[in-house]
Length: 259
Image 1 (cartoon, one colour):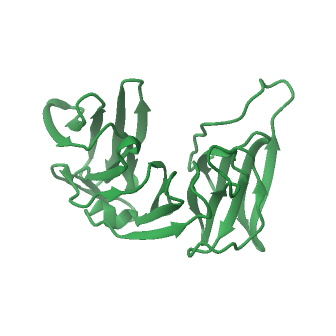
Image 2 (cartoon, rainbow, N blue to C red):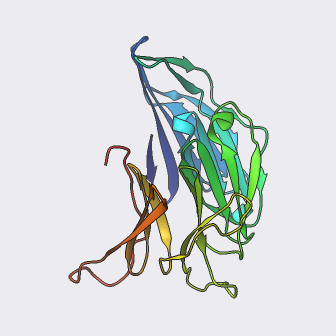
């Protein structure tokens, strides 16, 4: 799955992969129209064959669940809508079978105070509500089949942050009690019920995350914080910025399963 963003239009390009048994590769594109409040889907090899879905407002699109679904996060309208891509791969080890159908809108939408950051990892899709003080966790496999089942992850205060799974652990950004627009403090492990399960790892103004191999990386003022699982639990390491880099902090990270 590739995701492309432009200033006027948010585009999610979902790459299904190749099903070797059927020798099929299909590119299906989802485009969010910020002016009209709609999402248009089409196949790259048949651009005139289109499907259109209404949204509540402007949406930022995320290809999720291995390209089987798309999330339309509408921060200014307190809504998250989902669409099944109509592309479903069934892995059989030495090959994959592919099922192709029309994309469809999932009947259940999420509502809450300013949904923003979305994390898709380990079969879980997690959406942070910046003004709600919580995140909602969904099962990617269920979403791929149009089922929305939500587990709420409580945070101490509302803030612009994220919640992410790492193995059997749950990590959340942390902000001071008087948060508002105050800088985030760092990253900390919690139980699924929101109870602290580890010490705070400092990562001032934490913003942006990515998974690469067995690591989670997050941008901080001090550098890039990495987290991985070890024999005794989670292992944190701060990678400081070289002295010759411009002042500032990391905001966007891109990960890879092979790096």
